[in-house]
Image 1 (spheres, helix red, strand yellow):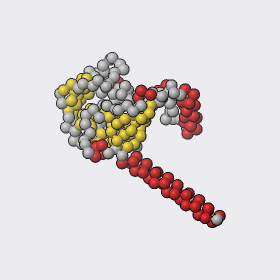
Image 2: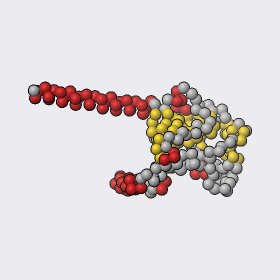
Image 3: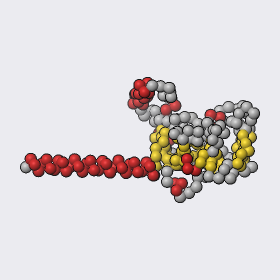
Image 4: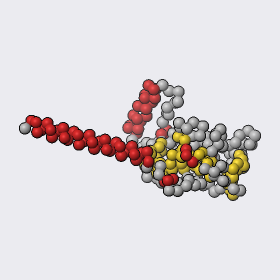
Length: 227
């Protein structure tokens, strides 16, 4: 009798272990080939995306279609491929792009960009900065010119040494917000923090989330489709 119980228990343990392994493999495959979570760490895409937004990136959508102007995408940062960036496609291969006094022109046509914001009213001459006056420049085939929606505070194609994003560097298209914290109201970790300092800061932030829940959640942004 005891032997039967032991055999049954081993069988249950094996079944649960197999189910867990299958679930882990499926989750890994989904992350690799289908969707991947991504969180917004900076304000370069404000007002479209806020610090603390958590979104899903479709990794298969561009298997069936081409990236186009206006898409918000995650990609490998051209000047450091180890980092992922998120920006909006402003011009595609073959386009001629020019920025005049903060206004974007693609192929000579002024772009209607209702999604952007400018923090500073001053216009910087091209001889001082590429922020407000840039180009004209032609985008190479299979490359993309990227800009953040927060135009005066975005490190993007206007400033990179490797100006354009290669098609192969695209991780996927940002499609939907699944969660959003008011992270911009919390102190952020510094890149120079030690591991212990990062852990301590993370603990403080988590305590803040718990004690101020549900006020720290941006409920109106959950399930928001990204345009």
